[in-house]
Image 1 (spheres, rainbow, N blue to C red):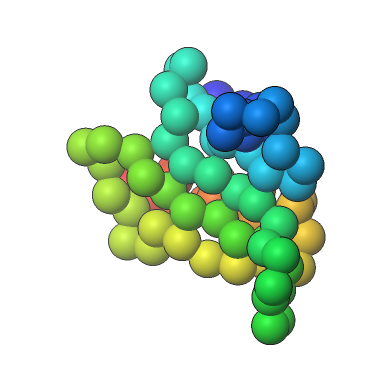
Image 2 (tube, rainbow, N blue to C red):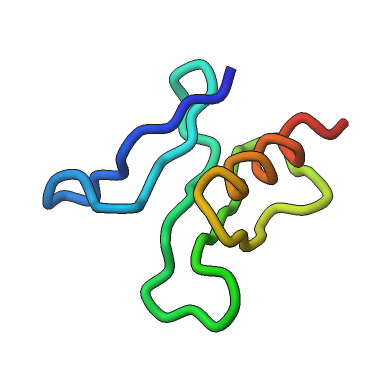
Length: 76
């Protein structure tokens, strides 16, 4: 089961920035880009030992980014 939690880069939780986790391990990140041209939400997968065909993307909402992330993560 994938879960999200606010990303903390040493100064406390960052707004609109989430670590994506599975079984307690961080496997990726979704955040709202500061300077974007088309879609403001960026996602990427960086799990060790598992590489889906697509490891990053953009979306127009947090919900869409979560759906795209999950779809790629679950793709065999």
